Amino acid sequence: MKKKCLSALFSVLTVVGLASAPAMAQDDVRLNRSIETLAKGEPVFGLFTGNFSLANARALARSNLDYILIDMEHTAFDMETLQEFLLGMTDKQVVASQGHAQMRTTPIVRLPANGRNDPEWMVKQILDIGAFGIMFPYVETAEEARRAVAAMRYPQPRGSEIMEPAGTRGSSPAVASWYWGVSDYGQRADTWPLNPRGELISFLQIESAKGVENAEAIITTPGVSAVFVGPADLSMSMGLPGNHPEVQAAIASVVELCKKHNVPCGITTGANDITARLDQGFLMPTVGYWGDAGISGSTEANLRTAREHAGRTD
Image (cartoon, rainbow, N blue to C red; front, side, top):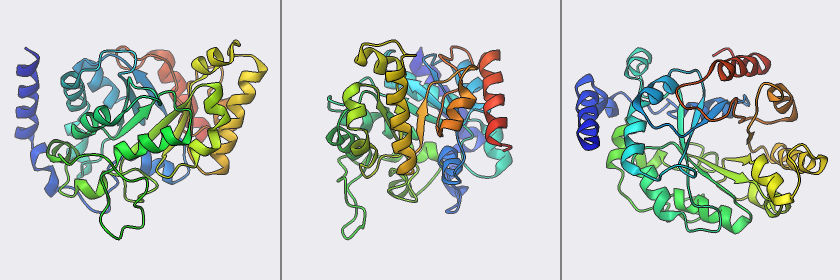
């Protein structure tokens, strides 16, 4: 049944013209809107979701959120379901009205593998169906960060100034190229800002005492786009409640290093702390918790508060 639904989705998108999107794509159009916003020094706001229904995909695509963290760490790792969800996030009306293939809401997928596991095969499958970013949980060392970035990158052309970290991703760009709506996917499918033209976000989670100890080495690994502090796992790793001053000091130390090295930093937030986290320097906070069906009224209110506090009017 699922295969029939997926086939039908491909057929509908082809009929309405998405399949001809490569002709629409423009060299000067940034496909990853979250990168476009971050490059201007402005914050972006997101939400975790584990509901992969088409109804949820449609609602999130029109939610005014900048990015969605599609959580496959704590849900089933199912490529066919993920592909269906990504297709559901394609808002054809917006694509048609704006005249180019940029998605309003950036889909980023969180892996089930943590830093010490080999992520290559998961990363390859996720990127090959069109995701615009990967979140890597529980990264604790610079070597783990390097391996994460390498898994997202193709080997670079001879003579490139950004050869390292050397890419290990195999070439099979047909589906992702179609989904992005470009004919030059191989040139754009790289991590930003290492590659200024890159459209991929490598989002590494620091969520352990060891990760905090190695935070600067992780943050400064070439190819790391952003860092996300996981406060729940961090507090567990430290053996302390989340509101303990030592935990909050650890969180503050990570965001300060991110600011020092101009790397966006994210964290989970709610109504009680979203503006404080923005003032602290977090540029990629989530504005609610688990999104099961679009965004709740409280998450919408948090998003509105965050956007107003950050001066976001787009």
